[in-house]
Length: 365
Image 1 (tube, one colour):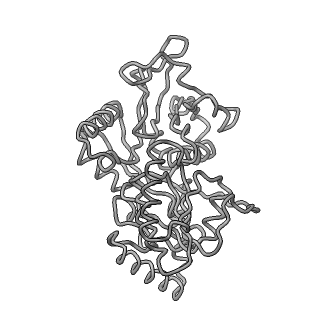
Image 2 (image 1 turned 120 degrees about the horizontal axis):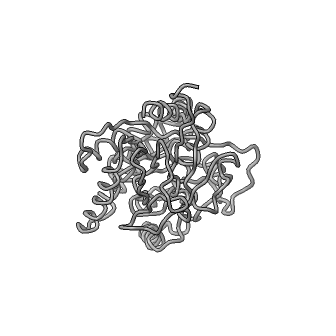
Image 3 (image 1 turned 60 degrees about the horizontal axis):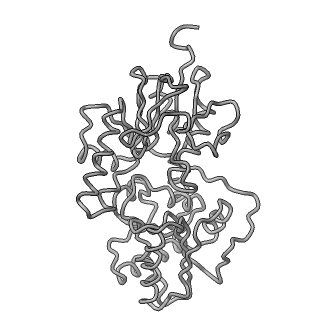
């Protein structure tokens, strides 16, 4: 075996999978499964996870957790194994919020950046400066940077100092596992409904949607994480806006849903709503496109780049404009039935194709 084909140790930092059913969770889940299936045998993968998730990628790979390492220093976790640096050829940090700091100088660091949402999530300059410092610190560690969209890359180049390091765009893949049998969800709609799904936070902009229920008998079902304080506060904003439009009894916030329930809602909704104003990529509308559903989306950040010409776009969030866009879009959808075009957009974002780009990068480094 020549040197190029000797076993190469690669650590995948997937600690953010601890947030179940989030975008980071699904990114890491599908990425990990695909890379194990597609990578050459000389690549030896380890997964950095919380301990309760050990075994998620099978029993024949190595798992690491922060309990294996020293206590945090300066907000970062330092890599130790039995009090000695543990060597990896490549460490792939899978998102820009990582708290780890590799110590071994021979490890090459790949950093995937999903977004710089702190730019729109906070109006507090001190908080924005603190977030920028965290992002800059992790960029300074990296040897090679990957962004999940051209919009994300543009944001990085405009707001952070990459110091001339190589920076590529590799799109996120999308994979919706379709279940043969899906039971009815815990909340069963009473009739036709619109569906929205993501983390229930202000940047997702769900509170603009209740106006679309005026003049009809539709329900609006919103699913996603709701149990933490920021989500609970934002739920109040959504429901108050529904009350102002007189439709509070037809806006349903379910909280997190299972994969089976999510599929049921996607498959049976009239249309999918994605008015988000802060995305580095934005996978939920593509999941609706898998079923050929009409998607109504914002024109902000990466959303148009991902949805392309297969979605209908809210040009503003004024209720009258949104209602007009929705009615015109549904009329177009029902008249021309562009279902195959919509499904083709989903198929464009293929995990295998995109993971192979990362494998080429591993080989290059």
